[in-house]
Image 1 (cartoon, rainbow, N blue to C red):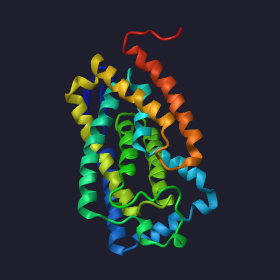
Image 2 (cartoon, rainbow, N blue to C red):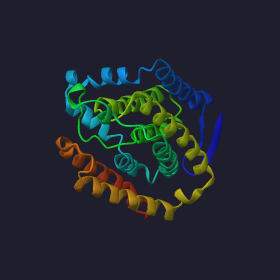
Image 3 (cartoon, one colour):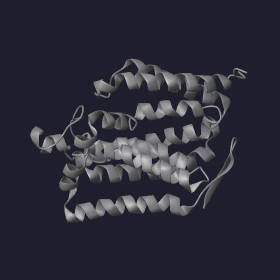
Image 4 (cartoon, rainbow, N blue to C red):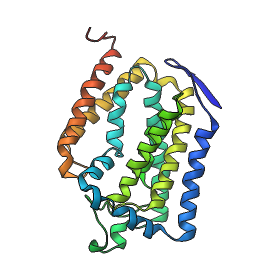
Length: 266
């Protein structure tokens, strides 16, 4: 078990099995794919799913793996659970540094640089080079992990991990990542969020009032950017993107004002 005390929730506990079992499964599956040399075959199989469901569903799902979107989703927790926000941000810095280092060392080409355009289905931009590992998979498992490791109900953990898995797989369906990219990226996101929780337990800056005000302001700016800037390359979901920005701006802004002592609307 690991546990720590924070100012809001008392003790947060997570069984070791919830920390290590997902990592064993992720790295184990990645190893099997590499040993069987089935990375391309599995990619092509999963990539065809959009022929059944259509492109828009997967464009929306992959949207939720974006870093800015994940940070915006955190805004409503800035007052009641600032330790979770702080943990995600710490973990995001860790997996970004680590993941980008691996990307530049390995320089694995993405599927669009390997396959001809008529041999697979690309939804949105191809995102250039350096495929391994998937930063989007790291981000979504970072976000899912911080909640999975701090809740008491197993069904919620299963739900969060399942949802994160579907969102991560969307990176294959839209045609920009290999299965091994997703598995290793998810594993990196999972382990760094555990580290983030440990760091959050010992660094109270993200919990105190000044820290919450600063972090909340940054996340509010993220909401504004999400409303105005089409940077995902999926133009057909811009309306949905703006809806998410408005919803979390309103919900998160309400909580952010509480960090200044506002009691809320009665």
